[in-house]
Image 1 (spheres, rainbow, N blue to C red):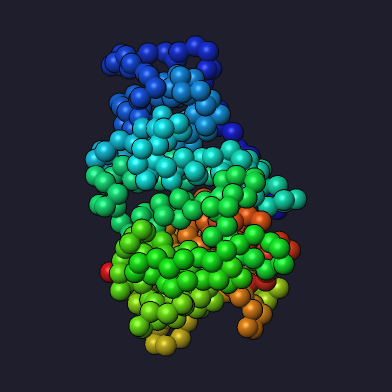
Image 2 (image 1 turned 180 degrees about the vertical axis):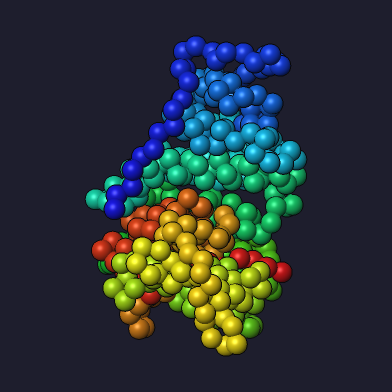
Length: 384
């Protein structure tokens, strides 16, 4: 079923909204941050108005409009924490000065370049909206930490991955390192060893596994040295995609969510629920149009009487931004795929010599008419 674009009803952008009795005039300017609007005690319509003013002044009305629709509708009344720092929207769009701003800049540029998704011939009508929405959520999360060093490993890993993002339609030689070359003459080069992570990968090696390992293990990424499940004594390989997707126990990376697909790979038939230690505590089994919950009692699965709608159990429903997502190939001996979750049905991965490191839809990726046929989709979180 094709996705339907849902546009929020916005106030007129040409006239200011009615002022509330307690409103204080905001001095909008290019240096105003998202947080200044998000956390100011203003009604939604007024936040929209000031967000539009800001968007006009920084010269990117489309991004400002989408951020207004998606991210700025949230306010302090929604339970947001007061940010420990403010990331400047102006810097993110035009003058990134930190790793976080640079990563978000690349993400926004990628959304601008691929408004309907990165898959040729498979339009995704709200792809750009979801990319912007994830960017807004990343801003909100990052602002809760005083610096890059203070952020949790999953956010540092996402920053590293976004720094590798190929946001240009023309393949730049500097991006070839993260590409896999399978055809003669196709771009792709050796992926160099990074301190604390896996060894060198050749131009024809599957590099999705290396991107994930480097994002978490290398000193350039999250730097969780000796905590990512690399082979003892180093070497080329960390866990491969099928290993990550299998659900087996891996050091420091418990499973947080697993979806089992039908034999034809077209839809999810079972969803496993885990606790924070990666132990299965319940499962939901598709029965008609709903998923029925089961719990294990005396070694046997028993229905609880609870049920969930399929839209509530889509891949990534229990995952956080930066968690590992892995797809297990249904064909024995065939390669799976892995990347990092961006939320909103998106993940970032090292793809191939056409896309390089790119952003794709998780839902589309498990469609056997688009990609390989997968048996399951698994999410893992970094847990110390």
